Amino acid sequence: MRRLAIAAPSLLLALVACSPDFGLEGIEAGNTAPDTGTPAVEEEEPEEEPEEETTPPEEEEEPPPEDDCTETDERIYVVERDDKTVYLFDPTTLSFESLGRLSCLGGASPGSMAVGRDGVAWVRSSSDELFQVSLTDLSCDRTDFRLPAGFDSFGMGFATEYSGTWRDHLYVADADSLGVLDTADLSVDRLGSMASQSELTGNALGELWAFLPLLSPARLVQIDQGSGAELERISLPSFPPASEIDAFAFATWGGDFWLFVRSYGMGNSTDVYRVTAAGTMTLELRDVGFDVVGAGVSTCAPTE
Image (cartoon, rainbow, N blue to C red):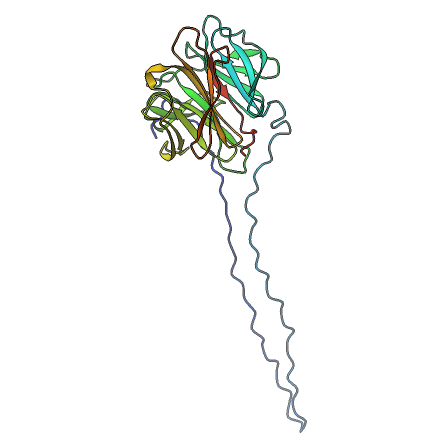
C-alpha cells in the first residue's frame, strides 16, 4: 500500500478461540491389607472430576456510541450545485425535502458528499477543500484537509467494515485511485486503482460500491475495501453516453442503487434513476428542477 499522506492506523478485530488439553486422572489402587485369613478389601481413592473443556469467548465488539444513528436520517441526502441547498430524498415517495443552504463554502460550489452515522456530512468543494456539516442545522466548518500529492478531485462514501458492525470508514476515489480517509487526522491511504472517475457509496453489509458513468458501458462495481479489486459488476448498457454527462451522484438505499445524473443541455436538470441488484435500470424522475452534484447516505440506512 503506497501512502499518499500520513498513514491512518489500521483497525484489526482479532477473533481468538482455543481449547486447553484436558483428561482423566488415573485411578490408583490402595495398599493390600495384611493376610489375616480374611479376603483383603481394596480401598480406592476418590475419583477426581475431569476438568471441563473451556473455550474463551470470542472477543466482543465494543458497543456503538449512545447517539449512534440518532442524529442522521436514514434517507438519502443530496446537495445542489448552484445555490448549495441540501435536500432529503425519500426513495419510497420519490420526493425531495429542502433542509436549507450551505453557507460556508464561499465562492466554491459543492462537489461531492458523504454522510456519517454521527449526523455529520463531509462535503468536498469545487476548490477541493473538505467541510464538515452538521445535518441538524447545516452549520459547517472548513477542515485542515489538504489534497495529497498525486490525488485529484474525488467522490466519497462510507461503508462498514463488515456486515453486523457499526464501525465504518470514509472511502475516497479520484480518476485512478481508491483511498481511505482518516476522519481524525485527515490523512489518505491509497488502497488500489480505479478505472475511471467515480462516485462511491456503501452500506451496513460491509459493501463498498462505485458508480463509473464515464466508461462504456457505464457500470456499478462492488470493490474490495482493502485492495480496490473488483468483486462484482452491474453493467448499464442503456445509460446515457459519457459525452452527455455533466454531473452525477450516487447512493444505495433499501437494496437498490439511486443515480442522480444531469446531462448537458440548456434547461436540463438532474434525472433520477433506480438500479436494482439484478441490474434493472428505471428512470424514476426526469428534470427535478435543480442540479445534484453530491449524494450521501449513512450506514444506518436500510439494506433491503
